[in-house]
Every structure is written in structure tokens, then in C-alpha cells.
Length: 93
Length: 359
Ligand SMILES: [Fe+2]
Ligand SMILES: [Fe+2]
Image (tube, each protein chain N blue to C red):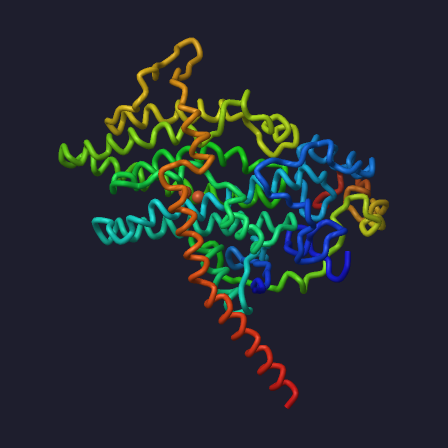
């Protein structure tokens, strides 16, 4: 007997916020995933919108911090505002 | 890792450690048995991975699903989270018995919501456990086979309606004491599940206490029912914190890994100190002649639970062990046709959609 596929659930807490990953659940299809997500993750008005996506449809980077994937941004301090020295007497900057 | 990888936290059944086949757990990897893998059996980890793991723990950061982790850390987590999930699911039974007999529509609605929350807690925790590479099906079958445990408290019966109140007050109260520190546990998905759970537990405890307060304002017979119920649940509630630290061999390692944040005895004491004034306010006596305020320690002294009873219940000799598992097995078997039919329907719809796309 095969298991129902695994879905990842994302909930928008209220208008103006991003959808945030809240967990996973099993469902036989997309519609059931939405309904199950409502019952499991929004029993107390925790959301105004739900996204579900099959876990096997997600591609991810490696979480390892030493991963070279993020290395290119490591040495680009000039991308940050604090890199630039502006005299104190210059206002509004 | 063959095929798809998965986002850090999302994910799971598939996220398994590198060498694992997606969807399948590696034998010996999840080892959700009673005992954890002894440290020696762990294959020598590549030094920098082990160091990286330890440094992450040492600076109080969280370990996330696809991080490298020692086998024994993973096995301990799977065992603990699975046991926790099973407790939420089995824990629905004692109170579930009273849903149809709740004395008013209001009480029935409250009890339904409470029991439904417990189902939700089980699902949050299974979801966290799956990020470690254990599959839901596997966890369920280990529970049904009696190879993974659940909290001993649920092997006691709910004999009177007052028990619904006492369970909310004492059992959920003890669970809260255990769970609040777990919100800071070192494994990210477990901590996040605990945060959700703790937010909901306070309703559980308060509805139970309010129910008991209502009965205490009632007839002498109702007050006696409450006292009788508290007498039965007090000691088993204290046992929920587990054996004394001295007899809890894995505790120290779990603390070192940041899985546990407090010792069993410390949490038990905290629970007693919180509960005694609540009992006084309610007007019930806690059934422990040794219970008294210790001004020096600024804590209550209390008697020793009967640990032989605790181990007997763990061995399966509690009043309801057989009944709880039989009920769970029956429910799972009765649901088989639904699970199969839903999959068949999903397959048919997918085919129809694919066909429509071709036309
Ligand atoms: Fe719960
Ligand atoms: Fe609860």
C-alpha cells in the first residue's frame, strides 16, 4: 500500500505578509492538500491564503554554510550602505 | 543524492541523508527503537562535518534537516519526536470517550476542539520527524507493532466526566512544563512544532481547570467526583516527566546535544510548584502526605512516585495499554479503504487531466 504524497504547506498570515513555510502533510491530491492544510495549520485564523506544493517538486540548495553557493556574496562589502563614509554634516542620508 | 533535493526545512520524506534513497529510510538510520544507538556504533564522521555540527550546537544555533548530523543525534530525535507524536494521537482516546457524553453543547464543542488540536499536534510532530528521513507509514507501523512508545499517562482510563477536567489541568499542565523548554531544542523543525503546540496548550489547560471549577461550585457529589479524579491522576502526572535523572541514562547526552534543556527532576519540581496553589484555589487536596512548603528551598517538598508502577505501565501492564493499541489498530485498518480510494481517485483525475491536455 503506497503512502499519500508529501506536500509542503505555506501560509500567508495576513495581507501584506509573505507566505511562510509552516510544515508538511500527506494528501492524495492537491485539493485535499489544501483542505488538510486548512485543518492542520489554520485552526485559529492563522492564515488568509495557503499554498501547497509537492515536496518532490522542490529543488533546494545545500544548507551547509561552507557551501560555495553563497561564497560570491561574501567579499562584496560594497553592496552594503555602511561601506560608504559620509560626513556627519550631510543630512538625510 | 539522486534526483531532487529539498529546501532546508521543507521537505522531508525525501530529505534524508545523502546516501539515503528518497522515500525510503536507511536501515539503522532512523532506528526508532526504544534505545538510542550507542555512541560507539557511530561511524567515524568526517572530522570537519562533526566539528561543524558541534560548533553549531555550541553557539546555540539550530540544526536543520539537510545539515550533517551524527547518526545517534538523528536516531535520538526520531525516537523522541515519534514517541511525542504517538502520545498526541493515542492521547485523543481517553477524552474522546467523553465527547458524546459531554453534558452540554458548549462542553461538547470545547472537547471536540481540544481533541482535534491533539490530532493536529500529532501531525505537526510527524511532519517534523519526517524531515529526519523517517516515513509516516513507517512511524505508524512501528506504533501499531508496539515497537515505539507513547506517554505512559494515556494508559490510564478516563472513568468519569471530571477526568476530562483533570486531564486538561494536570496532564496538559505537565505537558506544558515539558514542552515549553523544548521550543528551544537544537533541532529546528522540532522546536518550531513545539512553538505551535505550546500556543494551543494553554487553551487545553484552562478549559480543564474551568470545568473543574464549575464542578466544585456544584453539589457535594460533584466535588467528590473531582477529588476522586485528582487522586487518580496526580501520581501518573508526576511520572510524565520520566524517571529521576539518576535513572535516565540518555538524559545527559540529550542535554549536551541541546535536544533537552532541563532535567526530569527539575521539570517535575517546577510542575509541583505551579500546581499546588492551583489545587488550593480549586479546593482539592493533592494525594501526597509528604507535600509541604520548604522555605529554605522556596519550593514544595513532595513524595516519590511509585516507579515500579511506572515501569510496569511502560512494559505494557497499565490498565489500558492493550485497549489503546487495539483501538488505534482498528482505526487504522478501518481507514485503509479510504486511503486507497483517495489515491485511486487522484490517479484517475490526473489521467483525465493529462488526456484533456492532449485533445
Ligand atoms: Fe497536545
Ligand atoms: Fe493538549
